[in-house]
Length: 326
Image (tube, rainbow, N blue to C red):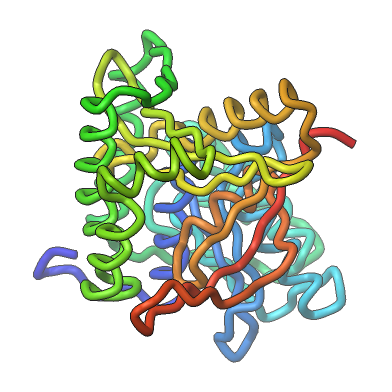
C-alpha cells in the first residue's frame, strides 16, 4: 500500500490474500469473499480454473457457493461480494441470482467485466426482478502489481518452458539442495514458527548430512526442480505402505506463481502410478497458507496431529491425501 491509499477493508484484504495463493498455484490472481449483512465473512473463494481444469472454478462462484451453504439457502439478501477483479458475465449473473446487495472490487476487468458503466455490458443495469445491485471500488497498488506481475510472467514464459525434476545423488547436488533449503525455509518459516525452531529443523533435517542420511538410510528420493537449467526448488518423497509421502515441496519465493507446484504434483502422481501406489499424502503446518494450494489441487484433509521433533519443538500439522488410483 502506498502512503496515499486508504487501507483495504478487512474482507477485501482477505480477498487479496486468496488472490496471492491463486497466483502461487499458477492461476490468474483473483480472490473473493462474501459477507453477511453484519459484515461477517461467510464464504471464500479463489480462482482455480487451471488447477481444477474447470471453466466454472471462478473465485466468485466458489465464495457464493460457500456462503449459500453457510446460510442454508440460495438467496443472499443483504450480503456483499468483495472480489479483487471486476466480475465476468457468469459471476455477475450469479450475484443477480443470489439477490445480493453489493459488489466491491479493486481492478477493472477490461475484457470480461460486466458490472460497470464503461464495461461491455453492465448486467446490474438490466431490469431483472431483483433490487438494483450496488457497486463500489477499493484501491490496492499491491493487488494491481500482483496482477501485472502475473501477466508479465505469463507473457515472458509464453514460449512454454519444460520443468525438469533431477534426482539428487552426488555430493554437489546435495550441497545445492541444502543451500536451497536454508534460503527457502528461512524466508517461509521464520514468520510462521520463529527463527529458533526453523534453524533447529534446517540443521537437523535439511543440512547436507541430514539429506544424505534420508537418501541412503531412510530411502527418500530428493529431486531438484529445474527450469532452463536453473534450480527453482525441490521435492522429497518416500514410499509409505500403499501411498507416497510427499515430505517436501518448495520453490523460491520469486518463482512462485508460475505453476511449479501443479507440475510437481502431476510428476509425483506419475511416480505413484508407476509404483502401483493408490495415493499421495503430505503434512501442512496449520499456519501455512500452502494448504489452500494443495486443496485446490485435489488434496483432501484426512486428519491432524502434533509431532515431537525434539528439543521441546513440535510440528502442529494437518494431513492431506490425493488419490491417484481407485
